[in-house]
Structures are given as structure tokens and as C-alpha cells.
Amino acid sequence: MKFARLGAPGSEIPVVIDGDRHLDLRPLTSDVNGDFLSGDFRARVTAALAADELPEIADAADLRIGSPIARPSAVICVGMNYAAHAAESGAEPPKIPIIFLKTPNTVVGPHDDVTIPRGSEKTDWEVELGIVIGARTAYLDSPEEADAHIAGYVLANDVSERTFQIEVSGGQWSKGKIAAGFNPTGPWLVTPDEVDVDNLGLRSWVNGEPRQDSNTSDMIFDVRTIVHHLSQYVTLEPGDLILTGTPQGVALSGNFPYLKDGDVVEVEIDGLGRQSQRFTAWEASR
Image 1: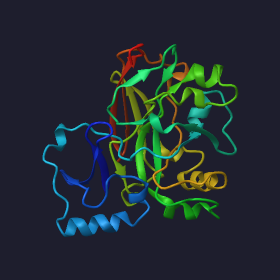
Image 2: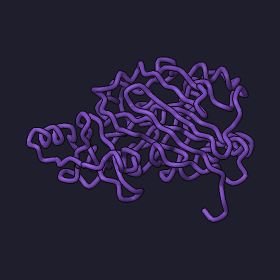
Image 3: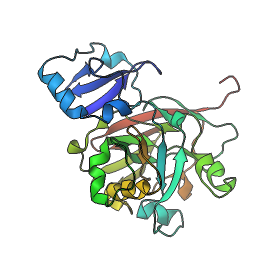
């Protein structure tokens, strides 16, 4: 199943995508949020589809696409999780997952403009696979238990400001990750039965020029290992978002320029859709 949220920021309509139709989920839920995802949401939606209880949104194509999940309680990220990306960064592959946080207000729609922060000279792109949690998760005994706690997967762009992240970090990365809008997400939340999560192509472009082109098979720590590892340190709540790292091909490599006003970034993952964002310079009136 594919889920989306359509409409103006703060007023998005939750929908399930059925072929070329966008069907209104409001007879079942107010939003694609933790409460909805923590139940047997696939069975509920299947029953509602069979009973023809979900009306079609006729003007869906004209509506803004929001993040496919409502604002999560936490956005937890894994750094340096692709072998080739670690190599291009001049770093040794990590022996345990490197963890940092983004703030919930970084999560925006997949085609929303992104503001380059005031004073930024090194704003960067990162195509990433996102995991959406579907059940309260703490102290899993093994990676194999993770599947029962995953509601689905999303495409994300983990936008980063490298000066803030590295040069004025104080030893942690979050300063370069938490500007408002720095996590375009979607267009869809796709349930695990439709995704071969260990073999997904990831790609990115800047102004139409190719940047990243890799596969989740290059992950150092796979999805189940990440969820299991995190559960030893944090209680994950339904609707929370985990970003799993980015492959090689970012500006940090030194092979490409950083983003400037007017640049357009596109990111894509097989089966999870495609995004496009225009990056705009910060202005005092914003």
C-alpha cells in the first residue's frame, strides 16, 4: 500500500493510493500519524476499500503533496552508513552506527522549497531511505524482531550544512542538520510488503546533472540492524522516522559545488518515488 498526505501545510488530507486514484482516509483516521500506524492499519484500509467506504479526491493532482507522515515525535539519523560514502569522506567505516538527531520541524513535503540557512556556504544534499516506525520499540532482542515494528518506508533528502555540521559542531553533527525544512520527505509511505529494502536503487541530481547513484545493498548496517541497535538506547514511538544514511556523490566529497540560490535538487529511490526541491537564499523577512 502507498499512503500520502495532500493539501496546504497543516491542513493535509490523508490518502491511500489505489492505482491512479487518491482515496480519502478521513473515514478511518484524522491523519497518517502514530495512532493510525500503531494499529492494524493495513487490514483496516483493506476492509474499507472492499466496502467502498473511502471517497475519491477528484482534484488530487492539483493539491500540494505533503510529507506522507504527520510530524513525528523524533527523527533519528544514521551517519556514514554506506561504504563508498565513508571512503569518499576519508573516514574509516564505522564499527557501530553513528547516530545524530534532526528536529521534527525539518520534515516537510517532497516538493517544498528549502531555505539555505543564513550564513551558509556549504549546504549539501543526501538521498536517503527512511524507516517509519509502526509500534513502540524498546530493547529488541534481535534484528529479526525489527520487521514487526516497521510501518513502512519513505524517500528523504537529509539536507546538511557542512560548516555547521563539522567546523562549528562541538563534536556532534546536529547543528548542520536541523534547519527548518531540512528533511523533505515522501511523496509516499510504502508498506514493507511492496519494498525489497535490501536492494533499492538511490539516485540524486542537481540542476539535472547526476550526483548519487547507489543501492541499499552498500549499507554497512542494514535496516533491521539499525532498528535493533537504536532500540537499546531510545524508545521509538509509532510514526517516528529513522534516516539510514546516504551513498557517495555529495558535495562534501569535493567533487561537486555546494548548493546556491536557485539550484534544484532531485532525489529518487526505487518504488518510493521522486522529489524535487528548489533551494532559495535566506531572507530576513522569512
